Length: 596
Ligand code: PEP
Ligand code: MG
Image (cartoon, rainbow, N blue to C red):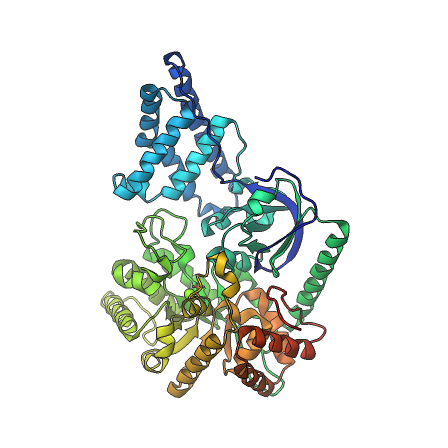
């Protein structure tokens, strides 16, 4: 934690979720505490045992209180994680081992607990304790709490956050983000993470301004510091001067004004001036987002991320839960179409009760469709839920991380089995349900012409496509500057996929983050894309701009982009193009350095 109060200190990270805000820093301190290591004499063993047991008791009490205070039903649903923490506090190995160490080694409670944790850490690898092995992070979190109680230090419960604060943390998991009492958090900044990490995506979906990948935020910021964060540019100012404050707030005012004005376009058709109809759909990952789709003028859901149903809970969702969730979705947006993506677990999202294994490269590991095909029963439960919901509205199924035709065939095979089971049980479903593949792995894009014969639609997932095509880990802040949506390779890949779709007569949508930056949308339209899925709040501004454009001119824009040889050149060109056409409403992100 920072000790010296800084003044007007600028930091630059990765803008993860737009919005310019000011607020007081609330430090979520998960850094390693300095633990006193003391040898004790026999007379003090009893005292250390008592201290340890008291710290356990306090921790238990605190967790119970936090749990009781979660009022938000949406957050409450995920409160099981606190039960897991309470169970760890009862773990015999943790308690007995520590008490034993105090007694036998004659060391203070902090040291004894640390030694126990070292042992348990080894156990994670040696698979001695299955229960704890799967909960290494939880164990760290709980032990941090015990240590703090032993040391009489304050806690940093995300769930307790009140007021207009900016959370400052080394990292936040999607689970942390869910645990925040969202109504009270103005924004967050983290040392780790990249723009396309799931935590960042969650922040964007919830419209919480966020900057990630700052590397040093937790070491420079003190609790209570005044912060300004620009979630678009990635800039953070610690204790800004009044002048700096004013210019930031002016930008904030402009963005807000433009967003409010754009709302007028929400209910108008997404149509270019030369009459080309574009479909603007919404990406949805939290059920709460459904309520705002109409307000933003979304024409259906182009990507329903189903992971949220599986995360932050101890058991897997059953068929009924799936069915109810998807039914609510399709009924809520009827008659528009919902695209339900099957589970995309792995990468940076893990099932709480599934041993992670020792994957060196989880992004290239047992993720998404690979997981579903390996864990066929889990897959079938979800497919049954989706099929049952299909009679209540319009939905289609999308498989994530398809790398080649065998996976599609296999996935379709499982779907056929599930259909047969439902038929046998006389459970109704839409037998004509459409099947699509996400194109987010280079091998899929290269063989798009072949894949197009097996599916009814494609949706290009640029978040992963860029990651895999450019070899840029989407959650690694050290290489986030290389994450370039306008890289000539990416534009060529997208053009190839669009052409393959056209040749086979199947629609091609795009649902990665790239689809909500207006300048990128213009190029993508020029490449022939007419179906976009994006975070709901971006729809009005994109709609406004495309209604002011001609489809033909976007073709020229794309052509010009293909004449450039670097992402920077393309970016410069497209920004100039945007500034010329939309002088009053285009606010370029200043995240990338662009030559004038
Ligand atoms: C993508 O990869 O572009 C995508 C939309 O999927 P996710 O971000 O959920 O991996
Ligand atoms: Mg993806």
